[in-house]
Length: 95
Image 1 (tube, rainbow, N blue to C red):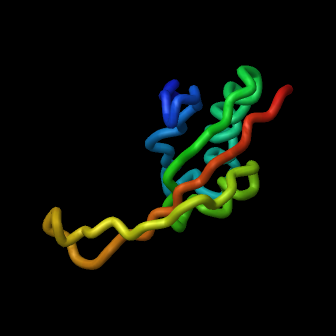
Image 2: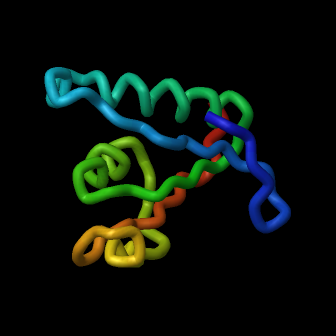
């Protein structure tokens, strides 16, 4: 996690979360995300992230809510098509 200032508020940012394909479905992703969420909760800070379709349900399960979505244009970087991204927020929670 990193601390970022966004819209004049301090937030926790969970960045570059990924789980090896051999560990998917075994709780590894939940453990990684819960680690970051617990830090934010201890500091009573909101969290935000940009979710791919694969991680979306995990983030919802741990309290993140939709606030925006966009499609990343892969053609600008030699790819084809677009990659959907969902912006998600998790309100501050006092532990």
